[in-house]
Amino acid sequence: MEQLREDVTCSICLDVFNDPVSIECGHNFFRGCLSTHWSQISAQGHRCPECRAPCSGDRMIPDTRVKNRAEKITKPLQEETELQEPGAQPEPGRPVQLVHLDEEENLILDEEALSRCLEQGGVGDTPVCLVSIIGEQRRGKSFLLNYLLRRLRSPDARDGSWMGREDEPLEGFEWRADEERVTNGVWVWSQPFWVPAKVGKVAVLLVDTEGSMDIERNKETSIKLSAFSMLLSSYQILNTGCRVKDLDLEYLEMFVQVAEVVGEAYGLEPIQHLDLLVRDWSSSRVLRAQGGEQHLRHVRQKLEARSPCKHPKAQEVLKRRSSRCFLMPFPGERIAMGSKGRLRDMGEKFRESLRDYVTTLVRTAGQHVRKDRHGEVLTGTQLAAKIKNLSDVMKKHRSGFSSPCQMANTFHNQRVLDSARADHAVFLKEKDGGSRNMVACLKVRPGKMAELFAERRGQLLARCWMDMREPALEKEAQLMELKAVLTREAETFLQSYGKRFKKFVTAAGVGAGAVALATVGGAAGAGIAAAAIGAEAAVALSVSGAAGIGVGAGAVAGGCVGGGVGMGVGGKITQKDKKRAKAAAGQQEEGDGTVEVSDTAPLI
Image (cartoon, rainbow, N blue to C red; front, side, top):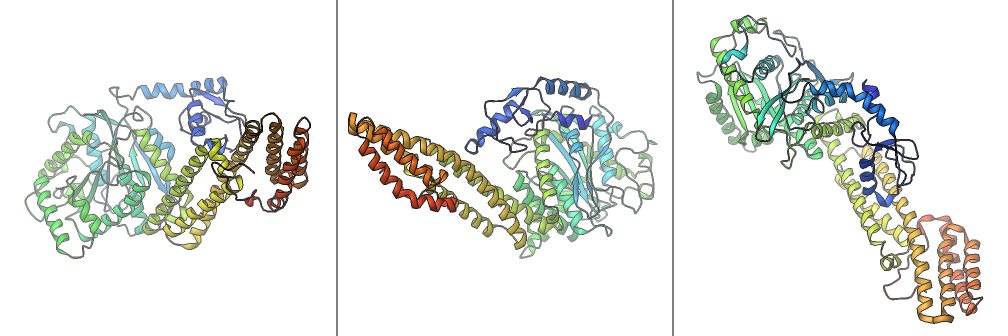
């Protein structure tokens, strides 16, 4: 079913067709998506977004066959989705793996799973709150998420009844109380939970992440996984044991460093809200939020006392009002030594702390919707699109993710290249808009315009070389690829510009002849214009062809009155441009000279 769904999905917006059109190459798109795409790159001509084949902008044919197929495929999905809309009876849900690791420990995103969680079931069009937990392995992260599941399933419970029966085993995300790692990669609960908020209903999803500080896993891999989880979440829990240690702060420093670089590239705030959740606390009798406030104050003071600060990014995050700390005591021997998570096996103080923490988190979840770096609320679909873009870069630069440093460099370099492409698009749009005016166009001949594009291309490539980070070999390869892209864009525009310039030359020549020389001079003016056309055509049609156009047009125009003048001037122009045409035949970029025509001077 998912494969069939891909066949009726627009490759521009990634949504299922409801108004598909077919273009000359046979590909299908939303009519609105295609029109918007072409309007943004009008100077480059109309090309298929998938195969890049040239096509006509006015030949978008409605495709009823694809539309009917899309309706048949999506009808069962819509019926399933309607059951999960806000207010509907919730489905049980299950853990779904979002990110797994290949043999080389590269992060692989399951885009299909991401779409199911963030774009269906009513989540796609609503704000989302993603509660994510990261931290040291074997410290009860999945255990905590399963009690969050119980609380979210009983939103109306006013006492501790949501925690379940005394002998009820704990289920949900896979977990067990032993030394072996259970969670691998990043997982999400498939079922959204709806909570009220100022913006209306908010979809809450829970995210579980493989534990860090595992001797079987590379340190860099743990950092990449945790940074990815940070970018997903709007409510981040950093789970640690006994107290906040220097190693915890070191990992937090690296998590934030990577997440900031990636988040800046994709418009995501790395940490909107942070809970430092300290498990197995025994250093004082004061627990929960009150004890956490005291401990966090102590950690901040320790960081500030050292100059220079050992963990500056961690210190900055912990200073924010959106960061807090919560202390939980040891849960009890039965829980720690292999219990199935039953309430009857918990110590009383741990049960009270767990109830307090989970209740407070769920009550405030609607206030922590996912936003971009500019503070704009993101819907599930918008967040999914950003994460998919991130995944595309991860696939393209897989070798650039072997360490946090390389990961940061890869995204930095990608941002530099994207900036250069955007600047080139602005430059192209500026030249395209200006050249639509005849006077402005005739000031810059095609050869000169080609020089301007070559100069701008060189400036952008030089800027990228300076701004991009090492290694040099990768920089060279990426810059060669960028040069090829910018050159293709320029050549497409210059073809269009050359035709536009010739059209304006014709109009200017005939007009000048008619006004300046009246009846007799009109023929001479036509001859002059024809000769100018011939001179420009020499670049594309060879020297002999241009001579024929220049002399022949002058002679024909002068056949009635003033033919001698037209032929004479046309011949001179043709002779003058023979050398230039020869040079252009061997070197296309030199075009037809670099002479600028002023606003008032005649064409010859």
